[in-house]
Structures are given as structure tokens and as C-alpha cells.
Image (tube, rainbow, N blue to C red; front, side, top):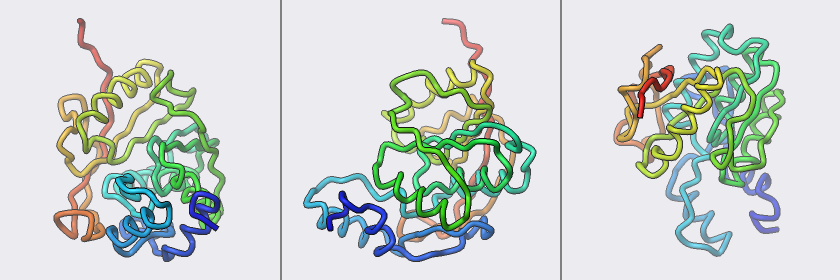
Length: 223
């Protein structure tokens, strides 16, 4: 059976269960090495130039958000939550563990949906999946929106920030987790907490990434 036909099976066969380094209360199906899995994904799918398997790793910004959520559960308890660009589902799982009333997750990578599903079952939580590309419309009706490690490329940052601004204008509390990626809009963010996060050395320039959780300020600019 091909990975497209059985993405959950592909994930289970090519990852191992690990405790998340900076949020060990949560376990995920994770890859040990980035390039090996990336190459295997391309080979098994018969396609080149695929995006990296973001769903197979606990990224620094997501780990920071997960730790912050678990340490401040009142942030999400009894509230509706969206984990944007969820990847492995780590932040969504943290929100569910912290008592969110409803947790939505989204990602444009179809493998992320399968990864989030197997990881939610592993952690015995429920996460609802959003089928559509949310950037094409208005943000959903939630109380808290999390975005981890989304400002690593300029084209993506240019699309995401206006959308997050719209969510903020709707009254949504928008929190960003990031280790200082190149296009992080620091002039729009208030730092809430900072952590030294262990990461997969095959992904980053250091084994420890200093990563912060930020709250997005309302866009008060007048054009």
C-alpha cells in the first residue's frame, strides 16, 4: 500500500515514539533523522521536490508553545482553540491536555492530518481537523489561536501575518512560538516566556534553540 493510500501506516512504520524534549508529558511519533525520512517520502511517493516532513519533528516554536500551555492551562481551559500549521499536532495536543473545550488543527500537508490523528490517539485526546486552507478565508470562530514556527520564509510570513491580524481584530488571542526565524515580526509581538529548547540536530544549527512565546498585538496602523 502506498503512503498516499495509507499515510498513517507510513508514519507508524517510519517513526518512533518519543517524549517531547521540552514537554515530556506528551509523546509523539517522531523521525530520528530528517533527510532519511524526506528521501524515503519522495521515493515512496514517486515525486521529487516535496516539502520537508514537518509533521515528523517537534519544532522549537511548537515545543515552546506546548510548554507554555501546559504551565498556564488557564489560557485555554474551557476555550475554543485553533492550532494553525499544526505539523505533528503537538500544540493542539497540549491545548487538549490543558482543558480546552474544543481543539481544531489545520495544515496544508496531508501527512500532517494523519500524524495529528495518530499522535492524538497516542495521547488520548480529541482533535478536530479543518479541511480547508484557512488562509483563503476568514479565521474560524475560536478564542485562542496558536502559530508555531510559521515565519521561516518571507512569502509565507507575508500571507500569514495579515490573516493573524484579522483573527486578532475578531477578538482572538493570538500566540506565536518561535526561535527567532528570519521573518518573525518582532515589532508586533509581546514576549511572554522564553525557553532553551532541545531540538533535532539534523534540523537546526544548534542542539538547543532559545525559543519564545509571544502574543500578537492588535494592528493599530492607519493606512
